[in-house]
Structures are given as C-alpha cells and as structure tokens.
Length: 149
Image 1: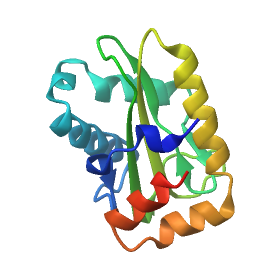
Image 2: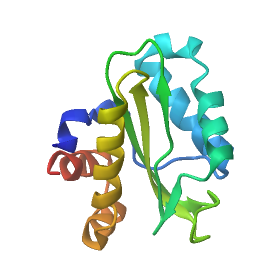
Image 3: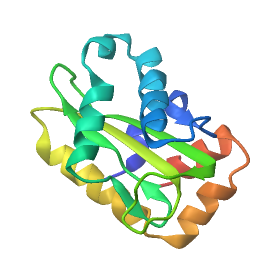
Image 4: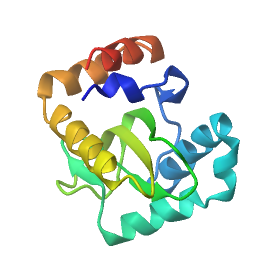
C-alpha cells in the first residue's frame, strides 16, 4: 500500500487554527467540504463527534486519526493536518496532539478503511517520521514528505 495514492496537496493544513477538539474536527471538515461540496449534506462533523464519543482517536505520541465511514462516497478521502501549538484531543497518553490524519471512507469498503488506518498508525509510530512532519516548513514540505511514504 502507498499512502501517496490517497494524498492530495489541497487536503493538507500546515497549521490548524483551532485550539479545541471539537473545533479541530470542525475546521478539518470545513476544509474537506470546500473540495467536496457534496459532503455538506452528509453530517460528517456529527459522525466524527459521535465516533469520538465511542473512544478517542488520539492514539498517543502527539497523533490523532479521526475517522468515519460515509454512505454515498466512492473513494477514500484523506486530510492531513498539523497543529504547531498542539491540541488537547483527550489522547490515550494525555499529551497534546500535533499530527492529524482525517480519514473518510466509503461505507461499503471496510477492508480498505481498516488497511489505511493500520498503515497510518504504523507510519506514525516512527519517531523520525513524526519529527520530520513537525519540522516541515510549510504545506509543500509536508506534501513531499507524505508523497514519499
């Protein structure tokens, strides 16, 4: 699997302005909806908030992978974001989150959804990747880093 197959430079936020968990989710959803206006009818924000109520997607080491499945989309949508200041995302290790991968997947394609989640999770366990991600100067550098994985 190549994560680069799912990366779109237009869906990279180099520094989130949001400072709370719900605001981060809202900012990321708004960003995705600009590129995919048809998602505005799908209650993406509410689905993500409901998913967070089941258990945090803040997996530790400054990383969160909010995700949900959606009816009516035909491919995976991946947004990547960074918060330089960090956000309290109720992570498992209680540390602020700096790296966000928002994954929206077709309802009927559970296998691909799970494979991508697992791949992202493994990738973000790599301390050198996390360091490079946090040190990238801008959206272009983030994109080049992500295209290489």
